[in-house]
Each structure stands twice: as C-alpha cells, then as structure tokens.
Image 1 (cartoon, rainbow, N blue to C red):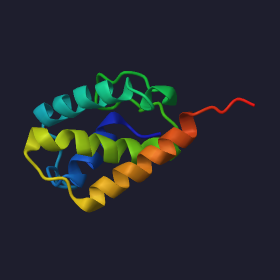
Image 2: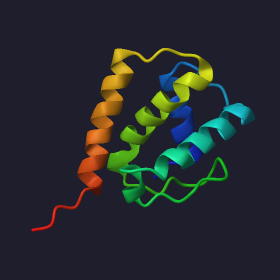
Image 3: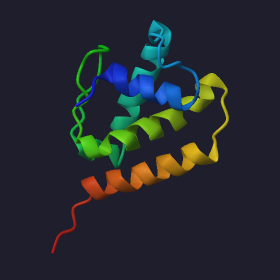
Length: 110
C-alpha cells in the first residue's frame, strides 16, 4: 500500500506540476486530496474499498493493481486546476488504468 502523499505526488508528477525531489506544497496536497476523495466516491472507483483521506501519511486502501489507474485518472482530473493540457500518453494511461479498475470492481453473476 502507498500513502496519500505518494499517490498525490505521482499524479502531480504526471502533469509536470511536481518535481520528484521536492515536497508537495500544502495547497497542492489539499487540492489533490479533495479531487481524490471525490473521484474515489464515483463508479467504478467506489468498488475498490477506498477510505477517505485526510492526512498525507494515511494509507490508500485499495488493491495495488488499481494504484496506477487511480494515479493516472487523478492526474487527468487535476489538469484543469493547473491549466495543463491532456497529453495522449496520459489519456491512454488513464484509459488503460480505468479498464483495470473496472476489471477489479465488476462482478459478473452466473
């Protein structure tokens, strides 16, 4: 499992807002935390068992297989806050991550 700070840092790095060696600014963490909590309450993310985040060092309670999908999709949701364009690479990574999340959360009954 990873911490909220790690997930948010990775998402901010994807949109080139955060350098890997710098700490996350408090305002950036709070903005990304709100977006993360909102996103995780929607379908299909809600099926991952996520617990609302309030602090940077809290663990993100989702399966490891879903982490990249959450990071890439969070990054796409943060783009407008930082006036950044959506790259084709990020769009593809977010789409592929969402497919994996759906695979993890959809239950097909016999």
